[in-house]
Image 1: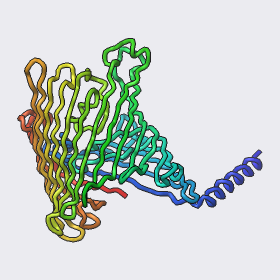
Image 2 (image 1 turned 60 degrees about the vertical axis):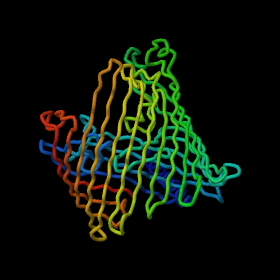
Image 3 (image 1 turned 45 degrees about the horizontal axis):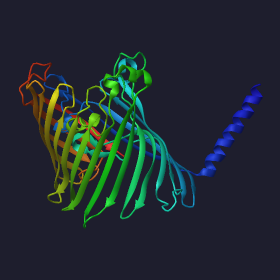
Length: 419
């Protein structure tokens, strides 16, 4: 018996080794991390409204992604590429971050197959299927993806049409724990159809992308019999953006419209998730974003994000919501590896209810940091930062220090990297 097992083991090892050798495939290794240590004027660091005030000196978690991919088949113009990614997030408070007591959470973020060279008429177009980050559009300094329909799905990507390329995808993004009236069946299946056109250049130094996302809640028959939240309507989100090279940097203008369960994204800094937890049958919303990175000199540059959002009827009791947020990050390069950073952010939001009452939110954040990075580019990473941040609630509510003060200080060290 032992001899048989040894023989099988040797044979299996030889087969796997020879298969790998014939494939001769390199492994692509990518990832992202942020982590650090910090304190506030009352215990650990305080994180507040970072998607509206800016993330520098205003993030408390340890987060990482590890991505492994490989071209497992290549012949002439045809290739098959497998991609995978796992993630981890924790508060970074312990020596050993485990799943015990939800101290750390591990997730499967991507697992997909991408096939190139089989679409008639365009050898560079991609057929894909599986779970993936799908063409996410990011506002880095506020850690927000304003266009983000990601999940398990399938599609055809970057098919050349005229001066640009078309991408079409079907993606699943369910809503969980919607209504406990349905025992063991309160997760609602939601499907998205995503159509985009990118690459149009109306004049020199410019580029345009437009798209439509159509969300379709798909409740079970039992859920339909309960009605209420399970009667959610299909929703649409329209996105158009134009970017322009500017002084060695760029400026981008984004305009979005959404209705039904997608409308709340216009004031929540969301990227396309569907709200199944409120009555959104009459909801509509708009958002305008202006962002850019402008090098003022060889050593000094500024990154900014200005967001204005408006939404109506996003809950059964809300008449209208208005939100404006402005965040700017200035960076001065002292040497090739040493930089000074300043970030300031402010926001204002007002919810007006059907009975005439309202609820206001506002705040400010100011951060200074000394950072070490692997070069002078604004987005060069890895980067290590030593920072001090001041946060204040503009409505003078007791938001900080265990709900006893309207402001607080954060101090700490953080690293961020991607590769």
